[in-house]
Length: 209
Image (cartoon, rainbow, N blue to C red; front, side, top):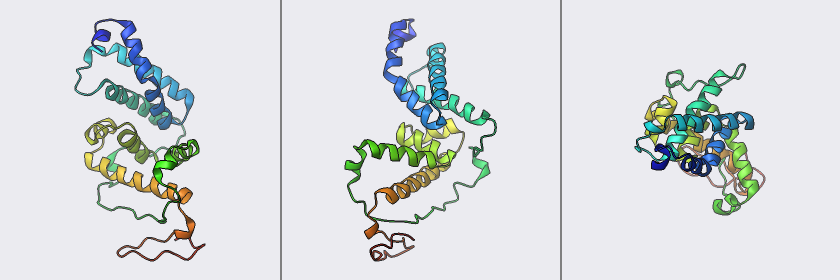
């Protein structure tokens, strides 16, 4: 990074090689369009090159790139004509009201999550589940759990409060877990959740609510 800031383009190209896939993956997940993701990736590195002198090392270079890419992708999301996107403005919904949704389906998983994650088809299902989340919860999950940004960084990027980041992240995690449980859970051991005490498992074949 020091060499790149000093004008060494070879050093900057090395930074691009190290981080290009990660930037593209984030943009692809946010925009769900490979062409838009490629454009955002190019924009991100052009912007980084033009603003290298502003990088102070308060965060890692990778985190700095994620911020640039996220801002660029958010602009695309907000400008898409005819796309019914959910506003990211925290004032449009009282996310921090303390209410936590209860899952509709609970079941033991047929296999351990560790074994499932190693399968390619499992990763594809996780991507599908993530794409089904509404936009504001999906973005928080991507920035916090996929990219590893802090609550403060996520709040700053999305323009919401840290409290809203925490609530949206929890809701996203619960929604993803429920979707994945419907795919990977053992229906013979499924049951409807109870508000207080655990209920006994439903009889075989009754895996719904």
